[in-house]
Length: 155
Image (cartoon, rainbow, N blue to C red):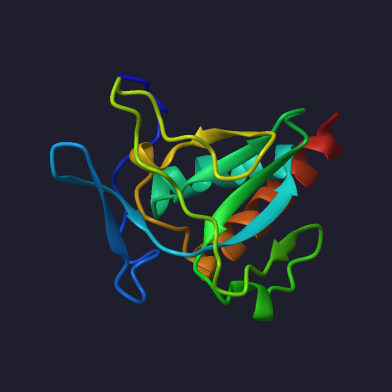
């Protein structure tokens, strides 16, 4: 099985609004929750710091990286884009269509990324929630930015 190094812990509140449906894989077992999501995109350096903060404290939902590893994308609940205003990031509204994580492959490999040209940093199967709570993500991104600024001042 593919290990992500991401804790499956967390407070369990992220991504629970709206009662996500569950996708069924062959054999009739429930896989990852399936729900439409918005996507918060951030520079990779800040995103990696935020992933570490989230996995150690509150749990993190699925996270994508682009092919060049320049940016990370956090899956967040639908509707997040309407109120997202974090400098240095963008939130893509999906108008209900959503980014739907697929089921894991039968060979234990992670689900295929829902966006062409991306890969999973944290696949749905290794995430602590179906989506990252936007309030928790906002705080983690702010802390990550402050950490990066402090490190850069020391160099």
